[in-house]
Amino acid sequence: MTALHFDRSWEDAIIAPELPIEDAISKLDKAGTGALVLRTPEGRLVGILTDGDIRRAILRGVSLEEPTRSIAKLDPLTAGPAISSNDALCLMVEHQIDHLPIVDKEGIFRSLLLRKDLAAEEGLSKTAGELLPKVTVSPDLPVVAAMARLDEAGTGALALCSPDGKLIGILTDGDIRRAVLRGVSLEEPSRSIANLDPITAEGRVSATDALRLMTERDINQLPVVDRDGVLTQFLLRRDLAQENRLDVSAVIMAGGFGKRLLPLTEQIPKPMLPIGDRPLLERTIEQLRRSGIQEVNLTTHYLPEHIVEHFGDGEAFGVRLSYSREDHPLGTAGGLRQGSRPAGPFLVLNGDVLTGASFERMLHYHRENAAELTVGVRKYEVKVPFGVVESEDARVTGLQEKPALSFLINAGIYVLEPVVYDLIPEDTYFDMTDLIQKMLSDNRSVVSFPIIEYWLDVGRHEDYQQAQEDVRNGRI
Image 1: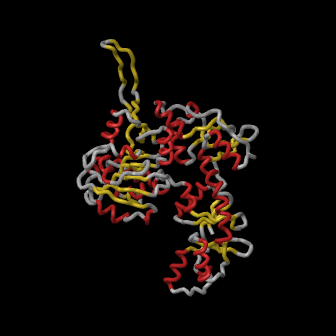
Image 2 (image 1 turned 30 degrees about the horizontal axis):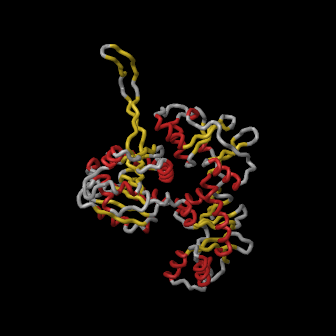
Image 3 (image 1 turned 90 degrees about the horizontal axis):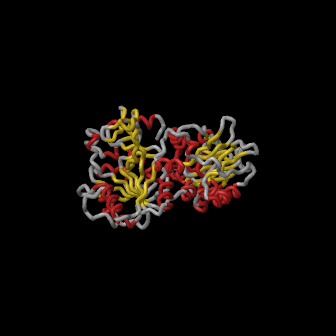
């Protein structure tokens, strides 16, 4: 039995106050906490740096070479080690913060509480505890009786436990179906067809870590045991995913020709090019599913059969897929009119973008700014290899030695309100840039959301090779 321990180490989330912002961005992406802890070598808390701090700094044009302390909150709210989970959650709600550093009396950093974990666990602990009597059965229970018990529990799996509560194995509905096909007698004991070496978690596990583990191992149930192997909780992926569900749909623009990637795209559409062991589009759909997005529409044009044959209705990939086929190219915005008008905000992504952007944070940002359209942007620097001379007529007024010019570029990720759908002309070539320009001309609300997570536009051969290398190195 493989037990994974979740006494979380915060080393990935701890940085020196003088670390450049650019390095902190990479650190934050790896930590997955939404914030980093600024700490002295002696362990004292200096401040908290959130992804929001970084995004605001980028929009202000702050150099990414500046130290993180220059943009961090240096007087964050903290709590002592004795605070309860409920009190910590109430404190974060009251002060509208998502991260609470725990420090001792000497100001030494001990841990970091995440609001998303506490909020999910508040209801999860009770639900998981209530499940135990329903899912716990004897390993010797006949398969036929286990079938009835499984139907009653509605959990998709049962926990086989000894009389003293120790976990022996897991019996899923899939195990039973396979046994029936093999002709196994239904009078056989459940242990004979169960998984006697299931993945488990030991000790306290956060909702975020549990969902991440179940997604990575492709399992739908996670038993939690104590040090003695006694079952303490039985977590269901459906419960965790529900906490993570976003009430938005998504549209992936997957109809481009990919001419810059010829000859790779002669027989296959660009979004279906393999990145590592899977097509690029499959990675994007997986990320949407992990974000809790259930409804996804794919706009297609070039070689659409490759996409439809691979994904079907999306059930095998954990989403519900629909398709909008363009008979002729309609641009990056025009294709949106091929589908039905969304009932609420919807996410739009270019099919050739590979990213680890937080769709949840982007949606929150969109709503926080009361935007009608939010465009994801990426900081892009061009280093001039020469000294730049500034002058007024013949008089030299300044000199910059090899300056770096900084721009915010369109990252091909958007959040739109339904009203924006009505601004797109029907059956007309219309790009997102045309839509944004139209909205700006009409003085409508358009905001930018800096993408600080991994991002790559897989549009050229060198970009495609970079994506393969990033997969090999674990950056994706």
